[in-house]
Image 1: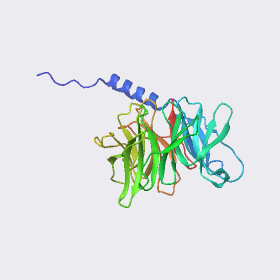
Image 2: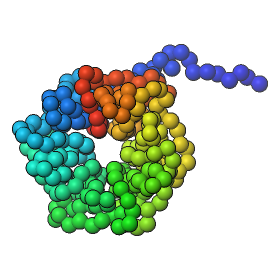
Image 3: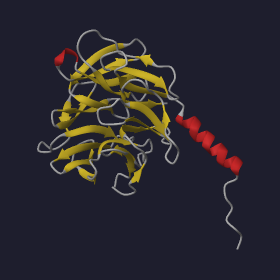
Length: 277
């Protein structure tokens, strides 16, 4: 029997270089307190070129940013005016516009709808008409963090019961939610670009899991608290924020599973990252 051949060292180094390059391409949007109140910022995926994207005077915080599918707009949640609302920022001219009451919004893959949280429920809104419909059952408590599957057919979300958090999926057109995983405080689900896995957070770490609840794997395994993870546009890496404790301060990191994490920011609190190509 011939001995099993390993990967030649040159090939291994090339694969590592490809993974590192993939982890450093594109742009990341996030919220930060580096200018005082929480505002929306962006950086290149290698941590360079910080830019402040929202800059309003007075009260209010801007959080939870997410790129539109074409990368030209950013949804975010804001307390401007004293009421939590879903806003949209057009990157070309920095104009902002309020869409509706609610928070934690995310675009549908075709950019025509949003799913968001209002009160205890997940709601879907048609952007062209303003028509809305509730997606989660009225007796489900503390629903949050809706996330569209890339095919647009399914939405993942979290719900908090007395026993703890759980991740569920439901048809985007409505239906009975299906449990994915309900241990370790699981919440904040987000889909891989190919729709085969969901990244989520527990009390302290980031994991991935298949939408049928199998294949649960840790992504982070070190000290501190890790939160708000999303896949890179090519699905090879994950961006997340980390802090020594729940109270912060939070810093952004990227990680290719199986590789050491790479810190992108420091010196402030930076949270809720989203990554566009």
